[in-house]
Image (cartoon, rainbow, N blue to C red):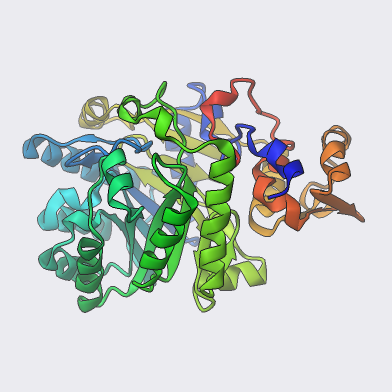
Length: 444
């Protein structure tokens, strides 16, 4: 990254997995909107489903997810029953039987439900919805808890893709972030999944963690690549101890500087691209034959709350505490506090407490932001016809002079030098942009 782009890399901006972003949700949208949007769903259009399980056996120090330490199995069972009840309630409000084409378990550690718990939730999904032929069924897994029995059971349940949290393979870094998992343990998890028939594997790696260096990042990439995942997602650690109590136990003095973060991100990208993986947007990599790589080439890449995807469905139903549902007219998010979520569902009510309606202007701005994030260019006239963007283009003038963007016949094109800070470019079109920048992560 050149010195010009580095000036922008320190800005705190959203990750833009949606527009408007979750930071702009308000209590003015809630259960009433949620119920109305469910009732208006078209049964002719397939949907995606996200299931959130906010429990882990231990909380990693770096984690920024909505999760908590599981101490009692009966509490986990209560949550699982609430999740099933929410699924059933939403299906009744939808009025007509909907078809699920994508199913994704996230967390937390979804496998903490146990084989019987996962099967029980899936049984409710199958009872209340139709499952499409060729269903993509994905789950996020902790390599430390992938047993041979679990791998076989996941295959029996129809799981087609598993995402493993690797983060870093250096033992010193692992100790600093509270996640000890030797490479041999990861290798064993991979072998068990592949032996069970689940070969579509994704890895999560991170930069910007305490004690990381460019050299250790390269070693992590080499070791991760030796396991031949189909996809790799690379995330910059966002140190937000004001919002995440577990991060207060990380030694801030051991964190890399902004310049070091940039070098680490570049080293990670170079290692993965050098191994033949196709860059997907700003933080994903995939084998050339992977659907994400094909979507990138064809211009059909999308971005949602799970990151980059080839899923073009307009509706995503989120179930579980803190989960977000996407409808044509807006977003709704469930209450994040788990006990409150369980009580709310137990009372027979929807658990949604905040959200955002999407206006035609929001939709146009969202299209621009998504194409910038996915394609690094946007045809402003085609994506936002009639929308006056004179002010936004004026704000981008410094970036144009700095060689980070170009404008040609109504098209905004991010140059190679500007790709690393595309989130900053996209933020120019965000009418909800807030002054409290510290709530967002740095652009790199």
